[in-house]
Image: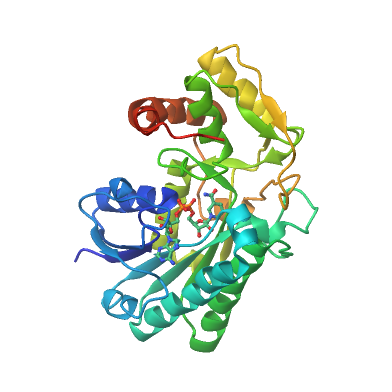
Length: 318
Ligand SMILES: NC(=O)c1ccc[n+]([C@@H]2O[C@H](COP(=O)([O-])OP(=O)(O)OC[C@H]3O[C@@H](n4cnc5c(N)ncnc54)[C@H](O)[C@@H]3O)[C@@H](O)[C@H]2O)c1
């Protein structure tokens, strides 16, 4: 029988990619999103889509009969979380608890929680392993709250729970509409429009970037491999690049001649992220898309799908 998978945050970047990946492999997908930042255009037409909030009681009936839940919906802009800490806690911690409780009542077979490398903000050992966390900012603390409820439900009710800590995921459908959009999309959009990219700080912060298709593959591994039950996994590549290097790689592809504009640093961002991915590798998973290929595909997607929307709406990009 076709397996039913719930994806919260299905209209967002990672959720919409995940839904498409699952549908293409024969799963049925029920998608939940309140469209606060995601868009309906991101959602594959085959998704059984419900526009609702993860804090809403409506989710209890939606989770009935589900084989697995990927809980991705979150407030995840760092600046937004700093400006609205109570909302961040309500959505990322309490909202997660609501989905967990709905999953417990529905006896869902597997629950996967989308955690973040921001959990490691106060840890300065690289590459970073999964066993120690030290969240500092409001976003990290609120996601940690959600993670703590997951661990509580795992221990209290023997729920089958897996936690994934994404590093910097990039690729098609990244949310370029944010006030401070993710760096890859921001650079590519501006440079394709003939505008200089903006770098906050010196550009020497280093990030472990992972292409979204590699994340999709890992998600599928988690669904299929029972060794992942109860585990916590970093989802990165084990290689990092500085923001200046990313600019140079995109410039190599686009040949614009544009130089970056440097602005004051953004508060609350880690200097370095670098994942130890040996736990994921033990499941036979390996990221396959290198930075050159990932950026090439991202440029193509933005040319095909984003640029016209930006130009038509005269959207300002940071
Ligand atoms: N993108 C990354 O690099 C990254 C890194 C680390 C962790 N994560 C985590 O992965 C998950 C997905 O991230 P993303 O990049 O796809 O983000 P995104 O902002 O593109 O998607 C999040 C989706 O959740 C929805 N949403 C927000 N609040 C909601 C609510 N209260 N009820 C229902 N829906 C709601 C939004 O409308 C959006 O569609 C998040 O949990 C995030 O914390 C992402």
